[in-house]
Length: 102
Ligand SMILES: [Zn+2]
Image (cartoon, rainbow, N blue to C red; front, side, top):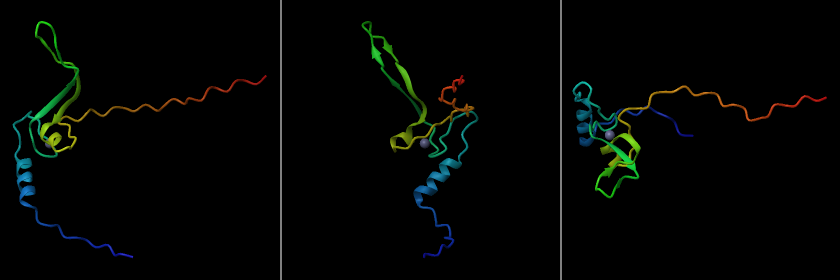
């Protein structure tokens, strides 16, 4: 059986130092900043964008909104504005009511 022991914290790599420095810079009030990478670039993706006969661009339906662009490029899902917590209702039981026996 292996014994567990406490490992002392290791030194940060130069990349981690840079990232923690970037995260440490406070954005101006109201500006969104990614909690994972510290980036401030966000993106919105749409589905079904089109150009009609008159050359007007139609945006389509929003698929992902307020996603960190830099995290997305690295394959990490990071929302800049997390969804508001919502109350989860208890699921209704699907069992039919028992009929009265006569
Ligand atoms: Zn990010």
